[in-house]
Length: 402
Ligand code: SF4
Image 1: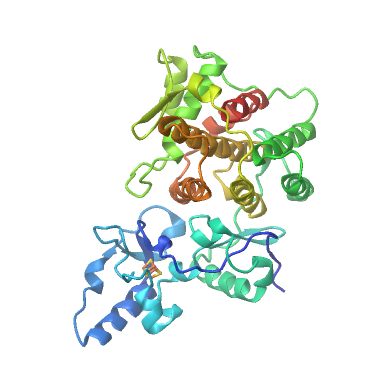
Image 2: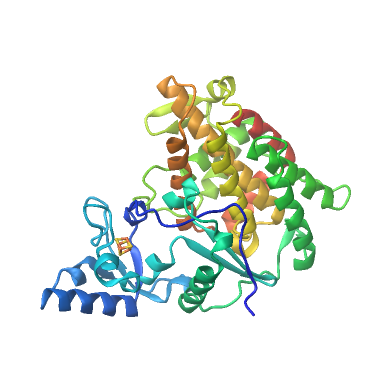
């Protein structure tokens, strides 16, 4: 019997906006490649442009991607070859959903296999997921089971390795122990108080710190020339450039430059500015501009984004970069802080006080796109753990992002 866990409060049904079909090359299995080429050639009565739109992949080193032999490239305007003027998938319209590439059929569902079952979640690249549009996932079990079967056929490598999870770096954790913490974390994230998902994440952090043996020192940063507040600023600058780069698909770098970040910490620049395109802000400007509580729909978006990641186990261990549970919760808190800081920079540079929901959604979409592409070397994971595990740093980043 399939032990499929489905999150509450997360809705999704395709709204047909076409946003998912922009910008990213779609990986194709050999079956996808043959099926689509044959369909296109049969429809054209001979040669078609389909083969030219698909590039053979060289295999690469990522074992999760060895199933994919080709890639469906985008046109010069960033749109998929099969996206019609009215933002429909021509393959779907003409020949049904089974004609689409497998990855397109699976999108935006994600499944994380763990020792306690399979956890479903969705990608917030999708407009419907961002807007929470459609029926709740919890009412779509039959469809999710089908998607899981399809997902398993494409990614048959089996259960991810959850045998080496840690509460914090150096503190091993058994899966059963984690599960008890997991229910408390989800409870804290869904609580009505405190308001603001960043504060509820901080409550999760305090809860996890209390689970650690007495006397543990979470301040693990080696001595560097930069003062702690300057390290905070450098981390904001680097992570902002890393996660919220505008054109995530044009960016060819997928790993945090942890060595360069540490080099900056060891020999800090005279002043640190945070940039978003042409807009630049000092930390004094960021500190003196307060966003406060967001509008309910924007706050709900950030809360769903976090809840979906925690429920789906996509924030620690085999779910993200091998981070510890505490490191993973702090990393999520940093992501929310970066989203808020990006909003602050926009407001300051455009002399506004608020962003509307659509603008918040686009920031979250950019971040989620980036998260689907980044890879973390062992050095990056180590650097993140050292830099973000500190509860004191969490307090300071919350102040900058308030
Ligand atoms: S094949 Fe269809 S569903 Fe997939 S990206 Fe292209 S237009 Fe979108």
